[in-house]
Length: 139
Image (cartoon, rainbow, N blue to C red; front, side):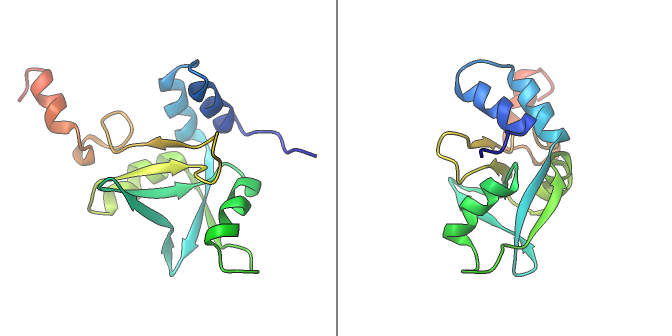
């Protein structure tokens, strides 16, 4: 029996299909509890394209698919349950480098990325903050 998708997974599917409101997707991410793998005392992340991506999963089934390839063998993968808002508002800024949130990366047709840009992460750590300031007449 297939597990029903979370509200965030539904919003991701809408955006991947070219419909839905991107602001609603960001809002749903912020309200959602994500499962973030824990490794060596910290949250599991990956670097790609000059960005450190904190990896979060919408449910245990998706996390389990990820764990098959990246987990500790035959043991369950330790994880923390964190609100998306906490990840992008507190954890991402604390990393000291461009960082964002990657959701459900073990799902080929259901993953999405929340990059370190204005409107997703705090302005002080957004990589586009200088571009935004120039465009609004403040820079």
